[in-house]
Length: 183
Image 1 (cartoon, rainbow, N blue to C red):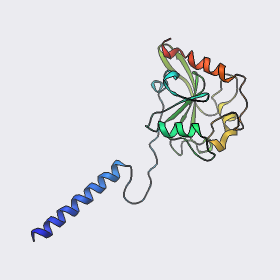
Image 2: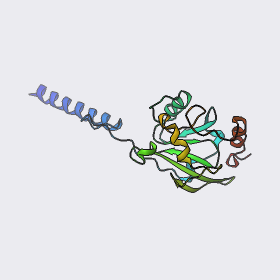
Image 3: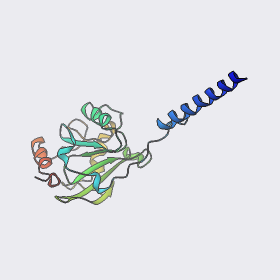
Image 4: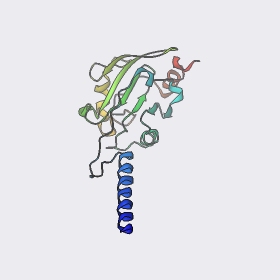
């Protein structure tokens, strides 16, 4: 009788441990995959670009703990791959794009675009969204990034986007002069 009770308790503990492990890993035990939690960027999420990883001309970070995955994709862009939720990409201090959860904007691979005011005291979000966000050269962000649909809307020299009227060296100067960095 004691052996039966011990087995029952052991089975119960194993079941509880398995359920806790599944919950900690985001699973529900039923084989269903949960969508990642959405990431809604706040002004404090945009900081000195010099503290973010640089890959070619872009600066990026990930606010959900998936920086390694985001950097790996930026280093080796593959058609069809998508950046993880919480990824923030900036080319210039006053502009950004943020990866939101699946379903936010499927036609745009769930990216949200930002116009930012940056100063030594921090960042202010001036405008956010998609169609109304205009870059510093007068173009609509989504209109340009849409050409890079196969590369998760990330513009690069060979991704089909309109070439910017600045060089990589000029982009670096703008990033290095980010007023949030406390020169």
